[in-house]
Amino acid sequence: MEGRAVTFSPLVSLVAVLAAAPALPGIATRTRAFLTGRRGTPVLQLYADLGKLVRKNVVYSRTTTPVFRIGPIIVVATVLVAATLLPLDGHQALLSFSGDLVAFAGLLGLGRFALVLAGLDTGSSFEGMGASREVTISTFAEPVLFLCFTVLVLATGDLTLAGMLGERLSAIWSTAMPSLALTGVGFFMLALAETSRVPVDDPATHLELTMIHEVIVLDHSGPELAMILFGNAAKLALFAVLVVSVLVPRGLLPPWLAVLALLVGLVVVAIGIGVVEASMARLRLNRVPQFLVAAGALAVVGVILLLR
Amino acid sequence: MSGLHELLLLCVVLTNFWLLGTTRLSSAIRATALQGALLASLPIALHPGWSLHILGLAGGTFLVKAVILPTFLRWAIREAAVRREIEPLIGFSASLTLGAVAVALSFAIAAHIPLPESNSALLIPVALSTVIVGLLVLTTRNKALTQVVGYLVLENGIYVFGLSQAERVPFLVEVGVLLDIFVGIFIMGIVVFHINRAFDSLDSTRLTELKD
Image: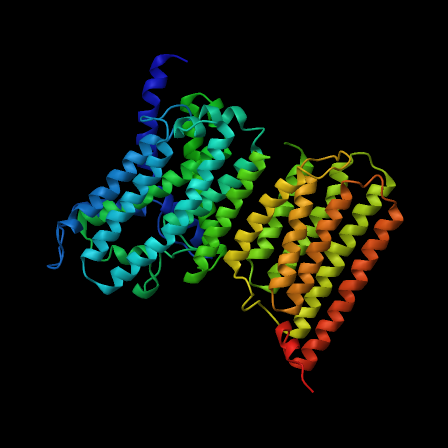
């Protein structure tokens, strides 16, 4: 491998993934609309929305404090830093150190914490309710994330995300296939829960009482709402990256081809989400933990298969 | 760690989780039907030679476990007009967790069972975990029909256990076992039907209130 391609490809792939991120919810929504016999919004709708929101002014409620204003910034910043930890080109991450999987989970947690605080800061009872739901779901989602990472650490013996999702993973991919397949499904279910897609939350809902994620951001406007929308799309992209990395041994491909494979994989995952959304109704709120426990059980079976 | 039979056994474990997590009876029956089909293809995957013994075993299993019994159970829920399990003794999340624990336990136990060497390292643990899951469903669910499904899964586990010794067990014994299950489920179905007629409900806890 020549030095040039190795040094620049992580940066280029990061830019490519972040640029493609707002298209993913569009693809999922479009697939869902197509399967349920409707036209649906254009795939690139979120880009237009973001462009429109950025040009608008921000309106603040008089009850809010600076906590409300820094919320969206933290949301976007944490997702961006978390993205640098992943080996997007299948070989290297921009940032990599032993145990960075904890940092990855922590960064996502920090982003959620900032969002929840901003929601509580508005003093609206609806937003407080949404915040409580968001936190409840994440209490179940985070252990599952760590269980999935446990499978990868056990399989590859590597504590860096760059190693356990990159070349080391590709090396053991064929022998650990069953565990990795289970982990991939686990990550997919997590993606649905973390980015508030259908079986957990409905992004298209119109009633504050049934919203989870949407209700927290009711008071945000203008560029700040754009930041949150972009942060959520990027988070969806990150989880889709995890799914694709686990299921496809991209470490065997040259970096540029691996980035291309990743982008194709992201589209496939987004279509998968659309299919799930079209075929399932939203789960009752008290059934959501069960959904995540099932994802955890899959990861546990993956761990056991590796331990024996 | 590769091979078709390992994949099939993994799918058997997944159908167990499906069964533990589902609230709808029709979904539970679909899970057992799928499990039956998986079990039927197992002997062929385990013993590549096309012997009459193996083919007969696979065909018979498929017919009974994946076609006849699920059809019969579906008829039973239609007749009894029950749709879902309302309140099991152990909740769905808890039983999923217990299922994961069961899988862990069976892998731990299977390593210590002295058995003549079998074809697949996964066979014994999967058999044990399926038995435990069957027992779990059989004992913690209230509806009589779910309990029948639990019994069927329990027996599926024993079947997987028997597969590890498939060359040594005579064909006639296997067929006899299949016939036993068939008759057993049939009788249970009839009983369920009568419970429903007598009590207007399939809740087996109400059987303890039998007075007069």
